[in-house]
Length: 176
Image (cartoon, rainbow, N blue to C red; front, side, top):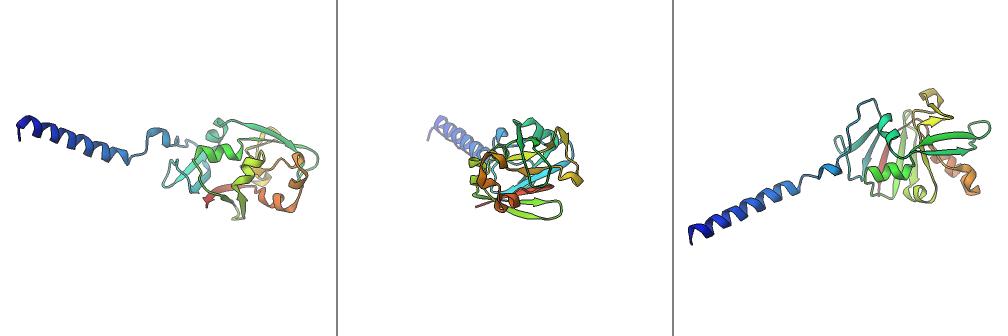
């Protein structure tokens, strides 16, 4: 073979090897920003975007940077209508590229509840970080509280959905 042909083949082989090695690295856009403050939420399981070891960690600032929704609703735990502010749970799941059918929400006290991912599409479920405009302390159901829009649909005013409204949420596990 001619030297020119061998050189071309070596270059092509080198480019293919280089491209193959770099194809395994996720594109920068697939990585989440790193939290700078205290991590208040970790999401793991069937997710595509991470910023830690096989999980996505969020601080309050990262959650506040997502589109916010204000939800005014009655709850069985408070007197009168309450205002909750935070990202929609479906937006948080989209941020991490969640691909499962159900969530397991885990609270600081290890309370666990299962939430169908379909709930986040059917209802405007908020991952509240503010209650009546104030950051929620741990003793006041914070720092994060999953709140369904109870006043928007009579079926939501039931034990099934109240049990899915976990407070002091620390972790979400995305499962099939």
